Length: 462
Image 1: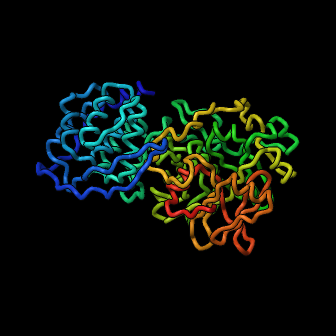
Image 2 (image 1 turned 120 degrees about the horizontal axis):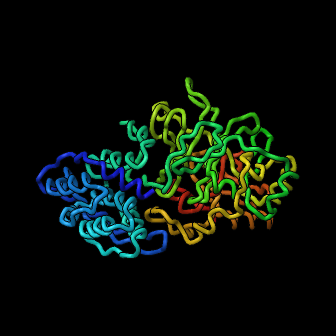
């Protein structure tokens, strides 16, 4: 994959747009706020941020680097970018670091960031350097430099041309600063395609084969499933299969649903895909290969519209223009044994998913056990970053997070768990949410860092 990146980047000859030779005036520095990263380390105060065009000297240096990607950059050019003191260019440094970790280019880019930011940055390994740089930029909320989306488009579409439609929408509601590469390419296979992606993607599973509960003997009772119930029909999606595919398109209760699973966020969600604006067909959800603050970025195959996976909002393309937001469905995280006891008529995805393959019991092999492996910026310190919470939106629109383990324990002890007009109830080994009238509210589990960064105003049940 890295060889492919080096080859395509060597073909890049387009120069960056010109700038003004005047030194930009800095904005006042962000007031000192105690910020910590996902490892619990303090993030230093933000540097001063210039405004206006990028200085001509920095643009010229950036042009030289950008037109020579795939070769070892001239240290003088990288030094000139760093010497500009324009921390907005840090976002371009972040993008370059993502693709060129472990190279001389990566070292030069990191040194340039340290110079431009004027702060002490832990060195660490090169992959760690990319995370630190990006965490700082997110936490400081540094604005993007002029023309940033154009720079990013040139780089990213060389790596994966399939991302081009996302950049083509001039009105896209995407914060490109937070979009990074997840390490895989786009899944653009047609619905029902059983083949793997030839160049590497996370392949969705469409309409998987299922069995009744008895036929699910192959799956351990203490292993995790993601349970969904639609119109009285229940189905369990085994975690090990979801870790391989991260996306399901299925029919349940005579409804079409799409179910993304962000392993990095600990978040399995489900949406109705058959409720669409006039003139649109039922959606087919796919994994783009991109991330936004460690959350997978999904898109609709037919309309090429990118979605905010966590919020279900269309961000690009025709569905954005239609103002479309996916309708969520509750996902209950439970053990298989407890789920099938609570739902004896449930089905479960067959051991081979109908694909004639074997799934490992633990595909990720503890990859995410030590905290986020992608940049997330600063974190909300009220809980540990990877504590699982049940997230729900109240009838009044308030976001509420319930620490999942504490909520389950309280309910098992007969204690009512409620906040802001939302009440939780046990379902198998998992939790469902209801309003005060007993109407179900869509809910799902996620790591605290993910829920709190996409719902920064969330209330927390204690």
